[in-house]
Length: 308
Image (cartoon, rainbow, N blue to C red; front, top):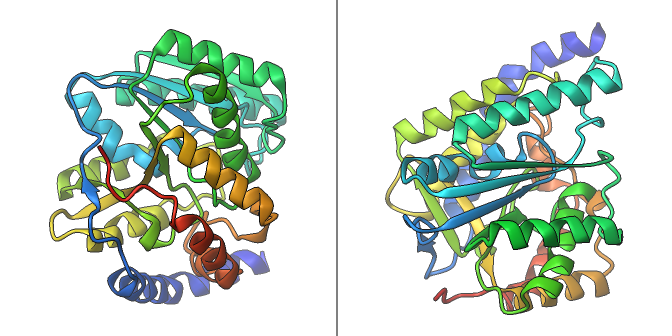
């Protein structure tokens, strides 16, 4: 009761602080000179999205997926975990069932052609499991994607990081020359200077994506307005557009090198605070801010500046 009262009192002051902080953060942060805009959008692309949890795909690239839908691209969606670790008052089985229903609804919303549930335990995704890597390899062989989307490696959630680590292991077997990997931001903001690819949203598309968040009713703790605010602020990456989604585009070898650097630096996702609502937005930027910058500086040199 007291916690709810405190949240109610702080809600609007926090919104104001969040608006001011994010405005100046994205306006003044150093950015790359040659960011590619909408380079991933093409009529003949075959898209594969790896999403650790139901809703990660929308947070990270919902606007981009709507663009693909309008172009009738062939798309596959992979949910890595069962969703049982979500913040909810539902019993575990009921929660998992509801999260799957949300995932199936998302398939229809974006027009995905195929949907895979790998049903790994939420919060315990482990890229060292050979059977998990085997499943991803099988999906790659079936889908034959020209573009793969996966979470950014510097993230505050183990499942997000392990998703991309699992992809690296699968690509090591399937195609070591693969060069069209787009890492998207979920709930740990990517330092702007690392962003080398951008998907622009006009106001209509921005609002269309925002409306899709209504699908996700299984978690009471998620405040999706915080993610919409960041999408709006990312318009500072370009002179065009009402909002934007950001990506770090890499080839397999560069991504493998990034993982090795972070492993050598003993990176752990729990060092950072995850964004889930306006109440922890500032913490997602400020907790271990210097350490995030240090990791980002380490990997900056291998991020592709020129995308072919």
